[in-house]
Image 1 (cartoon, rainbow, N blue to C red):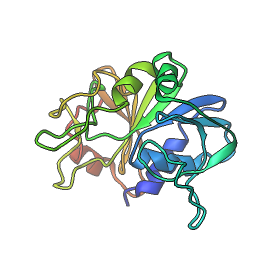
Image 2 (image 1 turned 45 degrees about the horizontal axis):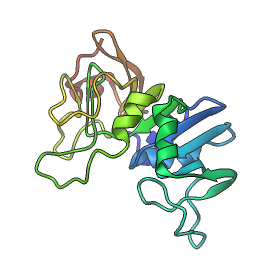
Image 3 (image 1 turned 90 degrees about the vertical axis):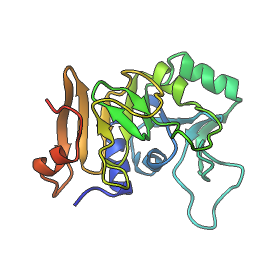
Image 4 (image 1 turned 180 degrees about the horizontal axis):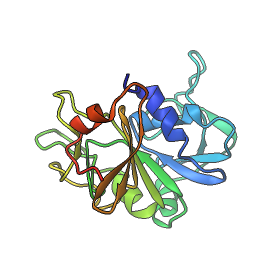
Length: 207
């Protein structure tokens, strides 16, 4: 069976290295905070929080503690707070080791589209543009296909780009891919997903 959202987040948490600062995008990536475990990871949110904890239990929510996706979160004993200028100074200054982001489309050369669908009202690109340009490594977590069954892992993105050639690894509900020269390389398949099924759901070149 394909991975569910929590299994994708748990797999993405395996990408985190000890003693690093990591940014989590909105959507599935926010769930990664629940699977850090004993690793020495400091999670950064671009709305001004360094040291995000996991989601709170029911009844323990604090309306003043939210992530960039406006979800309630918890603080840690080492959490610090600051303004957006400082937050983006960290991102643009290369202080964040990795970003785990959601996406609408990823191309085989690492192009990323994750901020706009033409004809839909959007308020702007948000922090994704700065993240993909400023962090050391970009990991995308998303469903392999859209609601119509069309692949989101493409030869070329059809939606407006967030960044060109910025994605390093893709984690979907079907498995894990790396961006390599000439296309994408299969790293891992979700339990119960065959390589034939994976390839059938992928438009991009697999090498």
